Image (cartoon, rainbow, N blue to C red; front, side):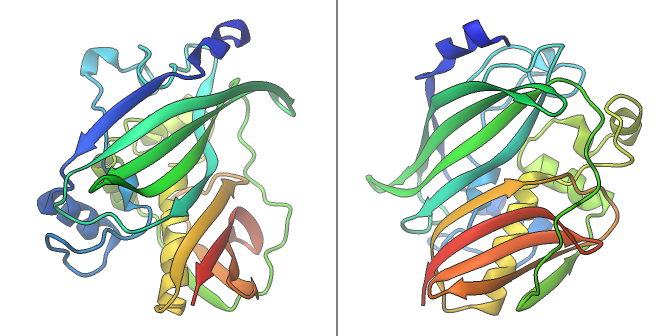
Length: 277
């Protein structure tokens, strides 16, 4: 992917239907935890990332597990790594289990920036999740294509004092299961020889989406009556399995919560959540 060609991707779109089948939802529940859900129940926040998936055939998978042939998103090619950097989510109403829905997706922006470790290409895609003729959830997702470089593993920003906190244990089995239910082939999450020998990480990399999901779930455990309105989240550095990390947060203003994931006292991921009581 290069900058002159990348602008062509703006406006690229796809529509992906999904039945939100209760059996498939059960597999996510078995992975992330929570009560058994039946048809008509609300899908927990951010679980939409385990659905509306365009399956990649084996002959389209590259050495890193990601597609080598362009689909909705451009492939990373041989000279870049593709990572999920962050995004923004608007919660209108929960998706409901067993009710047909579709995701309508469009690439809305592509920009190249000079980073500390070389050229970075940022792609932003908008996703709208429709059910019963209305938008249930809308989000913008930021994807970064970066040149291969040693990963930044040490945190520099201290974590604030938390009003609530939960400790997560990212076992290899959890990461494998989350890769499976989200159909995420990226080998950094489940292939220890590959991630250590080819990409230079000291161990398996925890998925950014599962960290965001756990941050929001911890807020809900602390505020069971809160209604989610919007979320803005981003990753600061990778978290490496199987070392535990904490998801924590605090309310910083009426209807506004600061969420984060921390390890060894420094921030790894952070988010801001708007909610109604």
